Amino acid sequence: MLKRLYTDRIISSRLRTDANLACKKCKTILGIPIMYQKEKRTAYRLFAGAVIKKIIKADALKKIRL
Image (cartoon, rainbow, N blue to C red; front, side, top):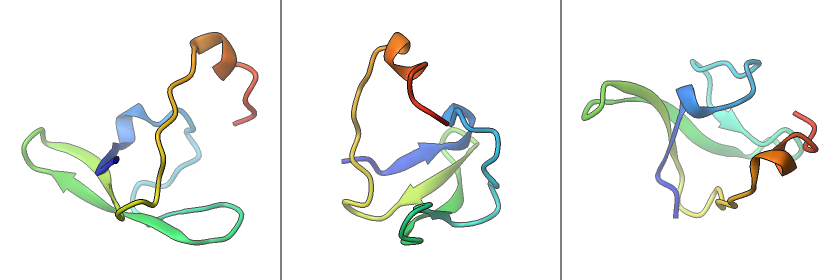
């Protein structure tokens, strides 16, 4: 289960880091912006079970429309 989503690891540059993270389709809020103090990095604290992780290969990433 994912707990945080670091903003420097997000591919899309159109994401506002000062707003809540929400689903584009249903507008459900998935997480809130925080400063993760242990690593001094900005991140989104994700709500329990809001996001499911799927690992894909880099060549498959090119096919996804961002």
